[in-house]
Length: 181
Image (tube, rainbow, N blue to C red; front, side, top):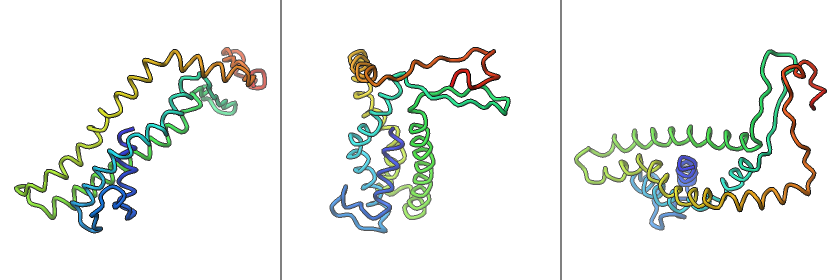
């Protein structure tokens, strides 16, 4: 989540909307861009929690999806319904964070000497995805503490929907996929 927050803030700043986070924002000033990303990451933390909360609920609901590969020698792929969204967000977050950090490391260290005090901003920017992880720890802790109540409420909403009980097939049933679809 922290990488995703960092990457969303950097995309917003790189698209030219850094004034949302820093009023005196000037484009093409690397230090001001770094400050805008820093402030944007802290501002977007609560919004990103709202994006990940439904993924957590899907993960804890027990709803799973599975794919069968009858023509290939592959086992049945059983995973949570949330995994598609989660893998998409995590893949984007990892790649964009690496690209953003490499971009700013190259830009800043070519402009500033290591003896300049302004170099502290890029160093904080590099450590920022790890610092933001601490901000997410309290909501995750609260979610885990309230998990039983959330889970009961979620199951009460799922039970009237008549979701069929998912039966995982035995090894002998794998040859004929129609028996368990």
